[in-house]
Length: 163
Image (cartoon, rainbow, N blue to C red):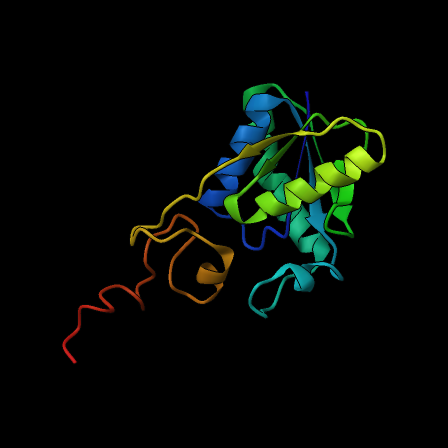
């Protein structure tokens, strides 16, 4: 099975790793990594995103051991538009997070318009941080948590201090 997934992945965290693991469970994986032009447009909050080449390097380093563990192949390709690579005929499945599930529906609409079968959509739930809220790159960049959802030293104990 050929599996697609896409994102900005800056920085990579345990929520992303859950997506990657599910994708490799299903088959060979192609990751569409948002280009420098698309990445800012996909952010809910305006924040700095590292250049494509840096993100691609780190993503490949993250994916290589997983691919080996699952005996799968992988590729990282530029994602220049939201529906991106997943509208290509060669894909069978698309792995998404809950907030990108609507995008998967749009991908399948485009595929139908092009006479292609819809993709099997696998939604992988959020990975909670220690505080029960989802791990996210934005929270990591803000310094609230680390890539595993552990509060950073500057944030530990906040909300419990006396007024």
